[in-house]
Image 1 (cartoon, helix red, strand yellow):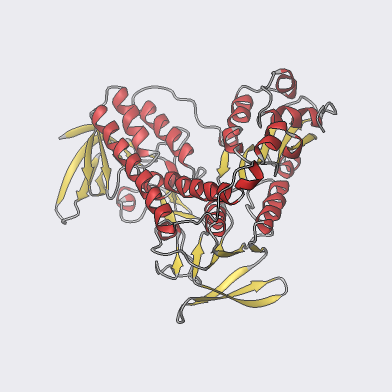
Image 2: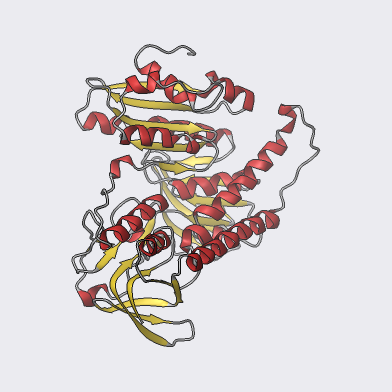
Length: 462
């Protein structure tokens, strides 16, 4: 059967691409080798948030007296926490199955490989093969945990995010290597449940892609929570011959041996582009990513690529928009290309981190003269009432025109606030409009306006 579009991969880029193409009148199939929804719904974004919510509920229970509520000796059921997370993932994956039926999209289970322009060979789990044809193919194969030779993942003692979400028992101690979103979220989760956590980060600071002030605050909060933080440090080797792991770590003051039950490798993501037929068709790649133009087209006509297998940020919401853009472009529309400098980034540990646009350093390096404002949540009535006063909002404006260059937040629920800054920047909003847009009181979102007021010497509450 010939299709208008076949999407290879059903993650947060693939399934929106398939749905949008169907909405535009195309006959669509989607090919998936494991679970509908991809890593995000099954082993990434969604189930991790379920784990983190359980950790937060446990934290609330332990500190219930702070709120005038007495809960005697709350305990965490690790198996129950993991079970809830898996249940959430299963529910979301079934939701994707429903969406496929609703949009009349054929689901083909198996591993897809390009064998010619417009032709995809699909190998089912039982080894049987069949070839499907389509006018357009969208590659949405995503990514997986990067494995370093110094930390070979064995799934037992040296684990990646997937194993970290489904360990049979809670480890008493854990080394987390890497402090990006994945590393920071799991470090918080396990530490909050009582695991002794040591974080090892190669760069000089935690969450190194974030603004420097955010990094400093996260390190302060993680240390306050009882974690050991080692920056400017590198795992040289891991010995797994004993009961747990012994990691040889190079630090600024010399080599040390860290011992723990398990080591979580969270050192980035690598694209899934092997064995899918790119070489045979001459599809160009660079540094392990598929090269695409502003419309997500590869150099081979009729073949598009989106999400983590392309050079943009490896984020679910980026993949979704790229997938929709690809579907619209192949349908004859003219979608607006993504502005990769206006993509929000979120980390869901406690405190949460959310940011968009330039960091203060990046803005200055780009030649801007800047006005910077900060509003600490300790001065927020809503934060004080909620017992969540850690963190702040930081805004960066161009001093000359008031252009909204960047926004960086750390604190409770800031991932729910950052969209205001994204939309504001999209609309080319200046500091003047933010200051004069009345924000509701009491809310955490007032912090954005108050930080802006601080940047211009007009702060009221600090």
